[in-house]
Image (cartoon, rainbow, N blue to C red; front, side, top):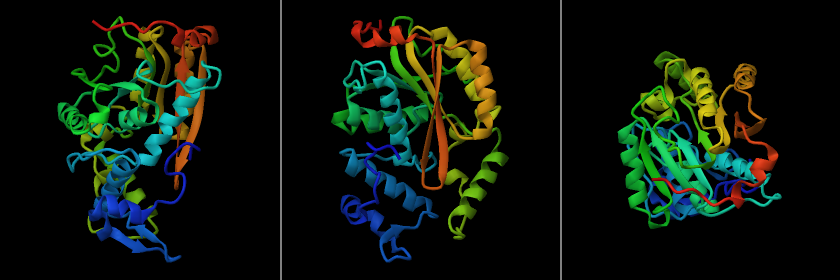
Length: 310
């Protein structure tokens, strides 16, 4: 876990229960006698992550419809911290902070978790886009309920499923980086298979009813061609906005996909490619980032006046 992650140590379960008493119903002793929760129960996982957001990030309200994917907050925070380190390469090792650092979250979802972390930790401003108007409405509700987020997150609807940046990125605007947690699966069957593997890995615990990835509507988990096609499309379209973004990035769930992604990037010709491993618990993943700007252009990025969007 990244050294700046607020959850690098053990969870302070008593403190989290004080912040969100409903979590207490799922607390149980571990084999060592310490408090833990039953991670095989989706409701417990959601309540834990709600408690983390409310406690660690100081929000007044954070909730979302039951059908939507519950993000593991520590892992989501790691993505932002690694990208902060990447940006610091253009600013003599100091992480740039403040609203002038603009971030595009492709697939902001119903929870707005990436903007929440980025706003609280670094004061960045975000544009969050999504194909689901229901998800955007949920994120807008979270925004309206938390004054500390207002003025730093704008939600935009992407009506075209096959597009990632077109229609979202205006010709006059720039982003320090884009980020994305793409749908992993190509079909419902593939998604359910992944859920069953996850359930079996929870120390042999049996659940009353396996749930699709512990929540998640279809467009959060499934797209035509799965992760591979989504990220290839992302790479191809990034070339159209090469001068408007310092770093494009995405999560990649499977190491076996990386060879193909490196080949796809080679075809669009970025100046530099970075791979940053991440992992929390038993899960390993990675961030793949690429830029079309030279080191000199990146060094000058934050010296230029930000351009307004008409």
